[in-house]
Length: 325
View: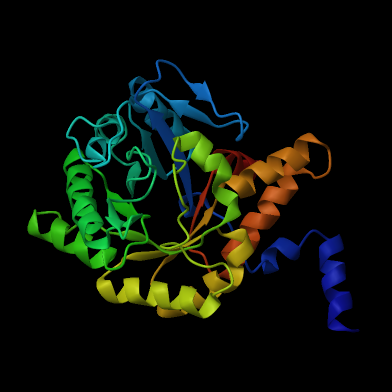
């Protein structure tokens, strides 16, 4: 009897799960959460059906609710009331994320609270750092932006963050943040680096959710060209050398080859199933083109199979419910 025929027999006898190579478990999933400083109640995000911006007043109850559902970790994004060129709200002691972190950790100490570390939601121009004029053209000042990231990282750690996740794609960001954390007594705080972050078309719904659209230019000068796989690996390799504890590939589904290669560096690998991936599945399911549950579980299993140890997805709560079923 041919091996394929034997496996078909097992499938008919419902024994195939015994031989399933890739398995999903709750601790592998992280739920992104948006906090809006101006919100007085939960505000739906039109381009991301089922997702909302939360007021900080909901932080404690949300933390308790997520833990009760089996969520082990969250990744926080903040939308401040005030934006300026220096992103001062990002490192303020009473900033939106700093308040949300404190509330969530007090309500649910075992919940792993990770903070997105960037400036795009906090700058008036929407870029990921400090802008300077160069020959009459605005451009990102890498060194000044690194100093800004250091201030944000320390502020988030003081608020109680369990981990920081720099997403700015600045040269030397991991080393600069590691130095800042170590020198201020936070050497125990790990860094999950957005080490391979592509200049993707799939971030549109996120920019709507986080109010982080840019007022000029784009971010292609400091995010990865989707065509460059070798360069993408090199970016993660550099962040590993600078002291990153976890390497991230973003987006996830279109870049599984990169996930698999980054895995060879030997560090834990995170993959971010981004807003556009979420919204595409939602739209197709709403139109009746796809079965939402089966599609989500297939995409997530593919990300896991490619080598991801940790998956950030807006479907985290649904996935845990489906796994229980």
